Length: 70
Image (cartoon, rainbow, N blue to C red):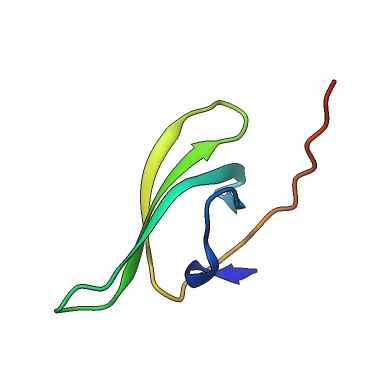
């Protein structure tokens, strides 16, 4: 488990039972309201790209992925 503050490009997250790779992230701290992290995620299996926003400090599940050539 990691927090959204630990996110960086290339980390693999497990969300809703699927694996997603962080391709872009931006920590946003608006003048009014709480901070949040805006991310772009790419599905490892399907290649689908989505934008997702997390509250700062939220715990997310990371996954360990080994890359192999077949």
